[in-house]
Amino acid sequence: MFEEIDDETGELVVASLRAAAESVTEPADVRGRALASLGAWPEPWVDALIWDAASADDRELRLAALAAMANSEDERWLEEVVPHLASDDPEFRYWAAYACGRIGSESAIPDLAALLDDPDVEVARAAVGALGDIGGSAAIEQLSEFLPRAPEALRPIVEEALEAARAEGSSFFTGLLP
Image (tube, rainbow, N blue to C red):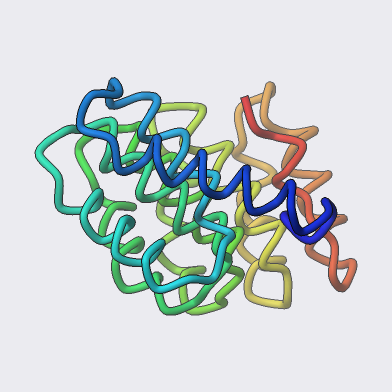
């Protein structure tokens, strides 16, 4: 993401995002959005911000930490992300599923499969998208088994996810973001 702009502009953007993410005077949603954007930036100070947000009392910051972990696409965050798939809060389940899809680890497939029948349709949709992004035979099997019982509104999305799962290197979930 940051590679697409010139170095000077990139440094200004990162500095602004860092200032917003570290600010104690900015509202939590602003800090969270800045942090989520920084997730793709591979610097130790970004990791420290993510860890701080992941353990914050503020719900918005904890959700932003999941979004930042997703944007990092780094498998080392999986251990922190997967437990949120079983959260009582559907928003945490949603962002954890999204993060699993972006990280792309097949080890998350069983936990994601459990969310296909989630009572919150957005969580189920996120699980479908994540499985489509991860791909491979295990994801295809889970999506194929889910398709006949999927709610009518989700069936086209499941079919698209199956196509993406069968196509090497595709990124299905990006188009599903709200």
